[in-house]
Image (cartoon, one colour):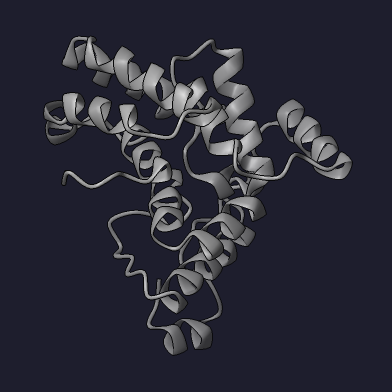
Length: 208
């Protein structure tokens, strides 16, 4: 991490990723970068979490991350899952996201699905206008994840408050949708995610 100021959305992207060995080794740097942010609710939430994770045993941090994000459908970091589950519509939503990244010159390989929130945040830090627009389009999913983390009293809940901070508030229709999805949970239908679209579309876009 360079000595230049780090965009708050980039810090959020890093702090919401699995705390691998590299990120564990960078915890002091992440705290220092958070300290340089302009004061405000978003910065305060990032600083508080960065300080908490810096002082936690690395193995415990990794275990708590897995328990939080890998074993609960309601706190999945894959945003389209909250709305579509594993239905075919999700595949089309993923393809649309990948196309939008490519149109902005953001290369996304196949190592991660394009609806992974840390990836979206990384893109928004590099290209704020289209990136924030993409986050806004997934506002309901962000709110579902945020409410799930608050309900679990998770240390990561403040990071989702920080993600939501630069986005418009929920409309009445969005709030109603969030309540419905929170009550029902992600759809259960499992049809697989491949292909993301019709074969002719996949051929034209080079696949997903």
